[in-house]
Image (cartoon, rainbow, N blue to C red; front, side, top):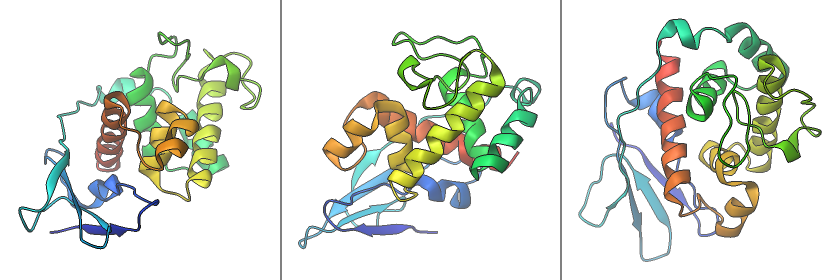
Length: 197
């Protein structure tokens, strides 16, 4: 099965979202890129010519045990119902951000399950970032905001969740930061796999 996307310059975006539909749990899904003579960027998981170059190589991603990952399902369900974000996507972001550790603190000061930065607490109605309910509801609200900002282009929304909207706006695509590219890929793979659990 082949996926080929066309985006006009200035709207370049990887639609890795298709992983959820195309690939089984253990398949690898490298993404290839090609810019044709008209400047149109093409992305595919199945290159049809030597003009395509490797853009992102998938690395294996492990999902924590089901018992651990089910601890917050009731809260995730409420967040899904309130914000209209898929249960599997919320769960994938939590896995990628904190590994389901409600007490996680990053080097940059992001806290809790969805790693919310202190400057966002007020806007996201978070008074205690270590409270799983507040954190998941706040993180999902932010994710919803980013999806709306980037017209439901999930890879861009995820890149903004990781690197900040300013970085995505600057490059008008996933920023060329290894951490952010790895993060987007990881969440997309987890999202696909959680949908199949």
